[in-house]
Length: 313
Image (spheres, rainbow, N blue to C red):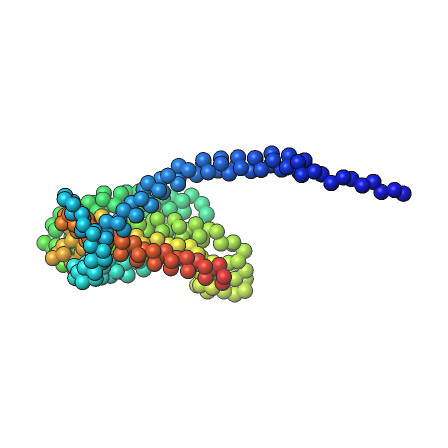
């Protein structure tokens, strides 16, 4: 029996066969690049270029009118010694520490309560989510009216609870002003976190909780040892979103307290606004923005760390 030898294909034939495939692959790449180019353009125009301009302005003495001059890192040195800026950062951290657990606990409790099948659960989901669709400015003005001395229903509530009189001013002290703003934000934002946590709860297989109950675990034990570990990625995401949003707080304090009383409720973003658009010191305001951006980057890094630990656990 004689074997028939097939001649090896020539280089030209191989190139002819590969040519159309390479052309088709390149065509797909170009189509994909064309599809994402609008998003890349938006990121470039509205994020990367403003980000670069912010860092460039932070290295200058940049008044609103007139010539700007190079000062290097002087704006950052000034920020470290600026007691007003330091006080605003401390107040922002205080506000963040105060409101984050309140939002988290309220949202988790609501998510657990309405994690039920049927129409009633969906109705309550809608009711609890309704404040989220209201803008922050509208919600702040609403609560500003509710807390007016002698007019708003919060005054009547305080009288019935023995916490004050009808002439009591909820914004007279920094503590009462902070509590009022926190109540507004909890009312406004709990629904958003509730929906995120509810989606995490509904992604947990029912078989796992049923197996835990068969093994004798009670509701609390099942929630602690089964639900919470599986909910960890969602918990990390909600926590980081809440902290980042609290660090960027501005609207509620600008409208409800105007930084008062005695400039004790000025947040970091509020101070950046005052520096840039009231004092017209754009270079120093840009430096403060850059410092706040570093804090937010650290929060994002914490998010990635938490999610990475979840993936490896």
